[in-house]
Every structure is written in structure tokens, then in C-alpha cells.
Picture 1 (cartoon, rainbow, N blue to C red):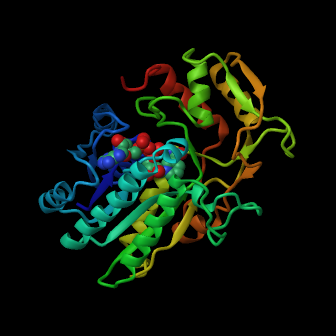
Picture 2: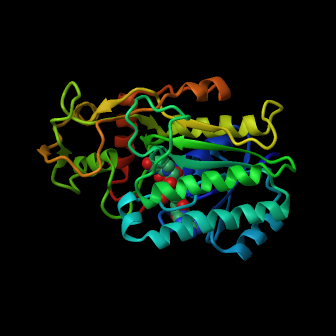
Picture 3: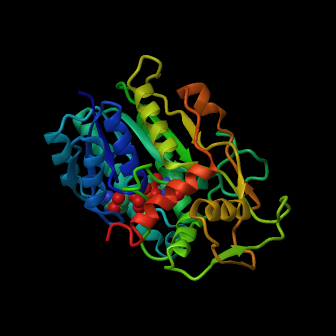
Length: 341
Ligand SMILES: NC(=O)c1ccc[n+]([C@@H]2O[C@H](COP(=O)([O-])OP(=O)(O)OC[C@H]3O[C@@H](n4cnc5c(N)ncnc54)[C@H](O)[C@@H]3O)[C@@H](O)[C@H]2O)c1
């Protein structure tokens, strides 16, 4: 069996990837300190898949814990998701973000170097592009992150690229996600944000369950057909399948040694805030209160991927639309109004 390590594998995206890897015939070891996740996600993944991912609790900055992990498990490739992801918190606590996201990643790569594991997929973000003027965003678009979170992602991309370049059979891939949303169709695993949700889907989900009073739509005077900002949302199961394709690729003859291709994972289609709000109301079957408020600092009009490289390199294309994203996210939230707690 080929064994994949998912760091941060108990989290929102990691649990869906772990599930999809198990369903695709891979063995999985999950490494997580549960900073922003619950053991229950992995228990549920085991139940859904009839699989048995191994769970190792530890901090990605703990070199000794990582050495012990690689010494005791035969790992063939790593998907590195563990880290912190809240843009606002990264502005308030940059040292914490550089420590977990950058120092944590170098600790992981050091352990891989020591134990001869040379295949890695890194979870990066479209945030590294900053505020580009030309849409859709291609992988060759200049990077210019505007907050510490985005800077940590870009730094780790560069570190991984340099390490992969040393030779010795290294192969890696950087995946830049657009806006992952939705949940597994079972409704048993999904996004469980810590504290105040920054993003549109988890926010609407909490309004729909009555945890929050109303949705604030930040600005309806953008130069878009309905005046609200447009984003490229991607179903988390499409994203998970993209990771399985990335691992299949790295472990195949198609992959080139010493190279770190960068690949956008998005749909290439954007939806406005008002379109998302309407699709959520349709999925729930009731009215979700919303109010137009002032624009939010730092929000750009449109942010969409050019998703063609993923199709050409990996043979992967997102297949799930906005209705499924809302229906699946709602199924999870309705069954788990307080998340995993
Ligand atoms: N969700 C998004 O919108 C989005 C977009 C682009 C990129 N990403 C990236 O994808 C990855 C996964 O994101 P997610 O949405 O699933 O977030 P998440 O918070 O649900 O998952 C991250 C996981 O990492 C774990 N973790 C945090 N600090 C750790 C540490 N010090 N040691 C070990 N584990 C630690 C958390 O407990 C959690 O399980 C992150 O690297 C994130 O930056 C997410």
C-alpha cells in the first residue's frame, strides 16, 4: 500500500482529502495538533469510508515529534495542510503565523530530508496573488501578497521549490486554492470555524441555523452585474479529488524530478455575493436575512482562477456547481449546528 501523510488532516479540507485518499486506495496517516479541528472528523471519515486512517497528535513545529512520526511510519508522500489561515489574525499576530506556517513547514521538510521522503504537495492559497488587475488569474500572474498569511504561503512555496531543486529525486507541487466551500455529501464532515467566520459560506450557514442574525453584504456598488463582489468558489470534494490527482501525478512517470509545478485549484467561474445568497435560500427553502452594508477594506471586485493548467497537467476539472456547494454545506450545518462540539 502507498501511504500518504496528511498534516492538518483533521481540519476542514484535510478531512475531505483524507476521505478521498482512502476511497482511492491509499493508506493515510493524519498528523494534527487539533488547534482548529476535532478528532471526531477522523472518526467520521473512518465510518464513512470503512477505512482506518492512523492518527498521530503533534505540533508541526515539533522536530522530535516529526522525526518520530517518520521513523515509525513508512510514508511515500506528504500533503502539507497544517497551518493557520485567518487573514485578520495574521495581521494581529504575525510572529505566530510565521512560526506555525513557515518554521512548521521547514521542520516538516527537514524530517522528510532526514527520512528520505521526497514527494510533497503544499496547500497554498490564491491569496499569494494579492490584488491583480487582470482576470482570470493564471499561475504566471505576479505574486504580491498583501498580508502576513499570504506572505507565509509564498515563502513556503519558495522553500519547497528550493528543496525540490537539490536533486535526489525530489518532486513536489504547489496547489493554490481559490475559495473552498461545501461538504461531503454525507453531511457528517464539514467546516467548523473557530470564532467569528470571515468567509461568506460559513457565515451564511450560521445565519441559516440562527446562530447569527443576518448576513452583511459588504457593498453593492461594485462594477459587476448586480453590484456585489464576485469570487471563484470550489466544492471541497472537487478540491479533494484534485489532491488525489496531484499525488497520482507525483508518484507516476509523468512527473519530473526536481520540479515544483504551481497549479490553481478553482472552477474558473465566479459567483456574486447576491447569487450565493439566492442559491443558499433555495438550498434551505427559507429566507435568509441579509443587509447591504459598506464595502469592506481590502475586498476586490472579482477574483477568479484560470483553471486550465490543472486540467492539462493533472486531468482534473471541478465538476460541482453552486447549487451542490450550498446544498452540501447546508446538509452538514443543519445536522451539526454547533460543528463537532
Ligand atoms: N479554507 C480556505 O479557504 C483555504 C484557502 C486556501 C488555502 N488554504 C490552506 O489549506 C490548509 C487547510 O485549510 P483548512 O481550511 O482545512 O483549515 P483548518 O484550520 O480546518 O485546517 C488546518 C489544520 O491544521 C491544524 N494545525 C494548525 N496548527 C497546527 C500545528 N501547529 N501543528 C499541527 N497541526 C496544526 C489544525 O488543527 C487543522 O486541523 C491550510 O494550510 C490553509 O492555509 C485554505
